[in-house]
Length: 117
Image (tube, rainbow, N blue to C red; front, side):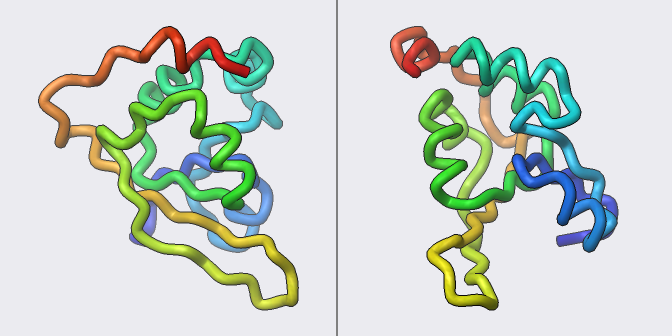
């Protein structure tokens, strides 16, 4: 990742501390808006699109749970790598690279998917 890359993640501490990246909160640890959209179970894609991160990074099981609210992420982000842990654990990170300028138009969230919990 390039210096100055904007990274959206649920694990803001380690990426900011160790990597010095511009980290944007997805889980609501420091962002009230992220907290509220997660609690409501809708609006996550709109929140993410508003951040326009260069990368979305997270533990697979968390991203799968979080990303289920906005399948539209496929319009702008693609999985580019998995980071395997250095320790014996099933935890694995997925890295998505985003290009917000590439879609012809931003998809409209599917209300059936955005209201699921």
